[in-house]
Length: 181
Image 1 (cartoon, rainbow, N blue to C red):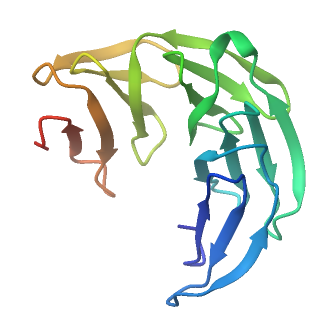
Image 2 (spheres, rainbow, N blue to C red):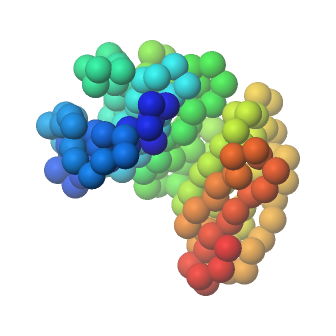
C-alpha cells in the first residue's frame, strides 16, 4: 500500500501495476520494470517506491510518478532479490534467494549483513528492529542501528514464511509452514 491508499503489485513478466484507492481497476502500469518477475516491493516513507527483480537482480527506486530514479544490481554471488525493506535514513535491506540479507542503498550499493537460511523479514514500525524468519523454524531479531543480534527463538521445525509486526509494534506475528501463527 502506498501512503495515498493506492496498491502497487508486480507480476512474473516484470511489470508494475498501480491499483487506485478503493477500486478494482489498474490506474497506471509500468511495463518492463524488471527483466523477469517482480518479487519485492517496498513503499518508502518519502513517497517513493523500491522494487526488486528476480532474474535481473536489480533494486530500482521509482519516483512518486513511477519514473525510474536510480537502480543497482545485486552481485550474482548473493542471488536474485526476493524481498526489500526500508531501514533508517536511506538504508534498505534486501533478502535474496541465496539466504543473504544485504544492507545498503540504491545510491551506494549493497553489502552482506547476514548469510543464514533466511526466508522472510519484517521491520518494527520504528525501523529499529528487523525480524528474520529462517527455513529451519528459527526467527531472529536484529538491531538495525548496531547490527547486533537481539534475540533468537525457535518455532517448531518448519520454515517461517512471514514475520510481521503489528502497526503499533507491540506484537510480532510469525507464520510457518505448519499452518500456525
